Image 1 (cartoon, rainbow, N blue to C red):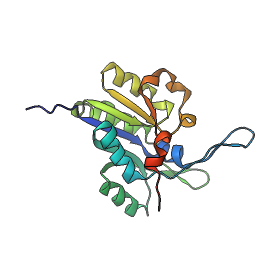
Image 2 (cartoon, rainbow, N blue to C red):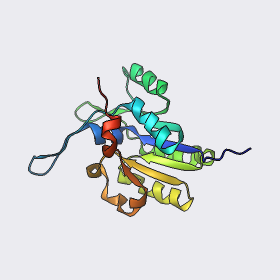
Image 3 (spheres, one colour):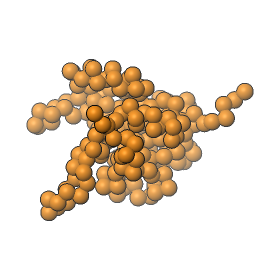
Length: 175
């Protein structure tokens, strides 16, 4: 007997998710227009499963020496980690742009294994992926950290967007 539910995979831009929830945002005059909060990644994995029936959640993340404990913890929460080697920016901070890996996995490597995709990012660089997935009837949702972090390039995808800032009360990390 075939499964009555579609197989749903999530493709998560960890940097966009982290910065889109964790970082305060300011307007041109220096006034705070968004207060960052700490996302609980364990609660977020449960949210993806409960809200969208996500079977596999791929978390695309830069690999940084010394973060092994965090990686083990993320795996224990149920994420499949896809690592990108990092470089350092001019300030010495690690930088790992995962966009190409996320697109490759969603559009090719995993494409035949899932029925619908949930992409977690407000990055406009994924516009071509969204167009492709819509064309193939595979895009379920675009999960964006907050309205201010959503690229203007995503304005054509309103019916797919969901903002997790509305779920802060469920998803915020509390000690």
